[in-house]
Length: 490
Ligand code: GLN
Image 1: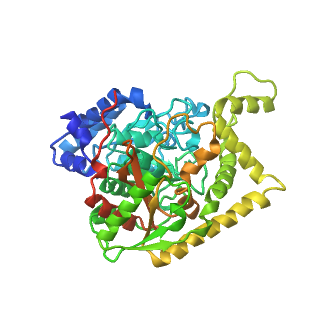
Image 2: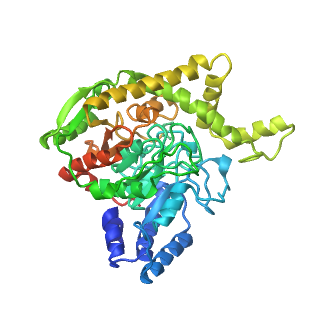
């Protein structure tokens, strides 16, 4: 019974819970058991409090029994990335710097999940402060890909992706600053969506690069992502960058195909560096759309070649400012031994931050420094504007843009840790959506000969999540990639 529960996509789980065919305690227990069985190998969770999860589940069951109105996700376990604050639960960003930090408040997305009746099942592992593409920058332990445990799951939302891919949670939340939802979703064979900047509140999301960060859902299918996005999206007075426009009923329309669909194929995303097996799977997906009557048109994103460079100036500049608060006084780890105040700062930050975080702070401080800011930071802002204009132009002639999520399938642990640039290049197709603020979704579209998942990325104009989900669903309906599940990991 319990393995059947963990196999259910979110929409079926919700239906069975609502119909009283299964209870939340039973459901939550099934996922907790899956965590217990697999996670000592996979390393997707940094904190699971079994009693706390079961208590929430029992409360929902009791409220359902008494006829209360308990919300659209009532009784559904949801795993949350360790960068999102949840009152009374540790939030460490997988960093030594925040070890022992217990937020006294809920992020707005967590408030929304609680209101929807969700059961918060655990905190997921990640690259430290969401900086990384492999999960290996976690200061706790690396996360492993359930399709091949010698390989990385992608990052930085490594644990949230693996939790869902290995059926340790039906859905989860991640954050995406340059690809951190879409890239691990692609490498783990699940669905991951980065909403438009401003669609979901960032209140309670521990900041990495505030003008790029956005929270979004992971699920095993498109309908699941629609349902979870619906629960977390919306205006929030506590986040002045959240946008005040109504949240469409994504789950109600997701099954409606689009007639006369025009798909843009970005020439720049099919160039040098794209693995032939990945390219083939993506082209097969494009052919699926063609067979459904869609028109495929080449589009150009001429400034996308500057996206990585632009991102690593803007994101690191913002990070150097956001991470200044961890000084051992206001926030974060304080060194045990120090002399002067300055030495205290140095020792605390030196001990608390890992190498990649330090590298980025140094780069950001440099890019913002007097005499260099115009040359680097301001220049990067100008290029960012051009990247957005490329998309605006492209979307005048097409409804969505489709291409690969990553240049290759999952690589081996350790393969890129000593070469930051090659690590950064794994986000080459995802990063420009964050710079432009547009939504993007990754959906499964095939496997390599070696059995590793391949993702298709769809992008749309700002606030077109509804269209994105419907287009994604059209492909899902014609294929069965999303129903493949990795073997149980021991
Ligand atoms: N991999 C990118 C980075 O290392 C993106 C991270 C993210 O989206 N949080 O910064």
